[in-house]
Structure formats: structure tokens, C-alpha cells
Image (spheres, rainbow, N blue to C red):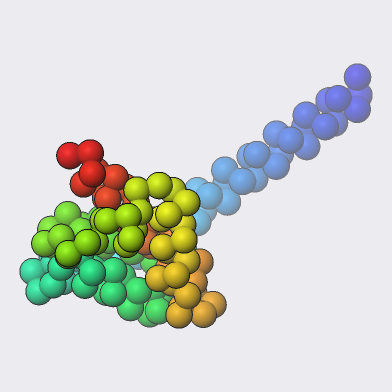
Length: 141
């Protein structure tokens, strides 16, 4: 019985520590994230007015090259979502040969599109994760 109480206590402490660390991280980064999200909205509108959905992808990759940490990833996702919603759809952008309609197709597409990102490849893949949802909505809507 004592062992069970000790194990449960350790689990509670670990969970409490994780929640506390998350709260501490958010409270220290909230202002930066909000500022980056605001800028992402503005930049998405600019890119969408000047280009198409492919321009959104290229701009997102440039954003990732400039900043790939966790605070920036939130803004990158906002940027991609907003840019794709506002930009004209590039020819064959959501076709099976481009982004695919299946998760496996999209995974392959994102790996190929982010192959030139070096150590920022994973951040690029995360930033482009919104493309799959966008294309799924295009094919359903």
C-alpha cells in the first residue's frame, strides 16, 4: 500500500510540475507570441495580395528560416492559415500530385518541400501542417 501511495505521489508531483512549467513558459512568452501572431496576420495579408498559395508556402519557409523556436511556430501556423485563406489558389495546389488528399501523401509532400531546410526541417513541416487541412476543406467544399 505504501508503494502505491509513493508512486501516486510521484505521479501527482510530475504532473503538477509539468503544469507549473507550462504556466511559467506561457506567462513569460505570452506578449512575444501575441506580437508575432499580430505580425503574422499582417504579413499573411501582404503575401496573399501579392501572390498565390504557392507564395504562401515560400513565405512560410522564409519565416521558419528566420525563427524556428516554439514561440515562432504558433505565429507560423497562423500565417499559413491566414495566407492560404486569402490568397488565390495556385494551379494544382491541392491536387494529388501536389499536397495530396491523404495524410501519407501530405507527409511525403511536406518532407519533400522542407528537405532544403537543414536543421529547421521539422519546424518547417510543423509550419506547413495547416496545408493538409486547407486542401481537405478545398476538396470537401
